[in-house]
Length: 103
Image 1: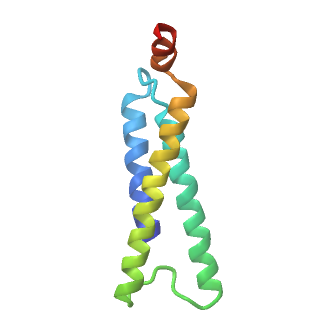
Image 2 (image 1 turned 180 degrees about the vertical axis):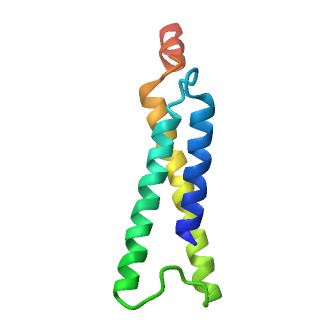
């Protein structure tokens, strides 16, 4: 479930990045790359589970599916938080610099 949620976030971030690519200063490509990297990580984890004799995605245990869904949502939220910190550090629209110059 974590992989599914992260793949959805990666696809949405990529579509939004592609739709706004020429004019956007929000570095949505960075957000998309973070989610694609997380998706790759969960895919490798699933393959490792298959090698060890487990399932690729747990669908029989409801509690495990809920835990995976919560983890997936947490990954999406943390990705957004890291992206927000990146935006503040880069200050692409120079909002922070202008507000500090006034003060």
